[in-house]
Image 1 (spheres, rainbow, N blue to C red):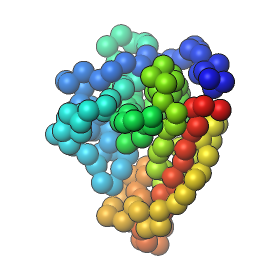
Image 2 (cartoon, rainbow, N blue to C red; image 1 turned 90 degrees about the vertical axis):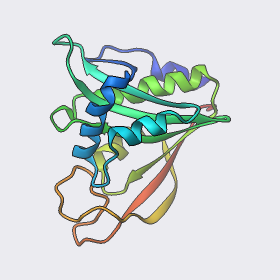
Image 3 (spheres, rainbow, N blue to C red; image 1 turned 60 degrees about the vertical axis):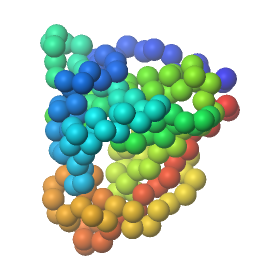
Image 4 (tube, rainbow, N blue to C red; image 1 turned 120 degrees about the vertical axis):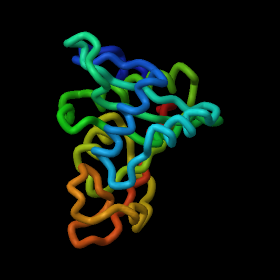
Length: 179
């Protein structure tokens, strides 16, 4: 698998591990700060019961016992994986937590011999789109009006709405792990 070399462990300010049950409340708080349609810790716990579903958390290496900086939830089924959500705490954005999570998730998918990873991202989230493209994801589709239940002007990092209150579009992106 040619991609494996792209995802070697590199020095990062974050450690990534499977989420502990007691960290789900922190993940829910981060999700609420990131999305208009937030998932509570009960929703996260329920989704985690689905076979093949994992939550990875990124924590700063220093200081010790630092709270969750970001989390990624994905589900593996058959020969593919789908990223269900990725959210970073507002004060941690742009520091590499999302990249650390993506690198670890991709490494796990390669180790499991999965063939592809899919995700949906708000078309109005250029930072996330840039990260995914840097990792090799390509747009394969679009869902018009996909993000429609959030409140316009909520101040969330990814509201899923355009500035005029219309529902936002989701880009469907894919990473081929066999390339």
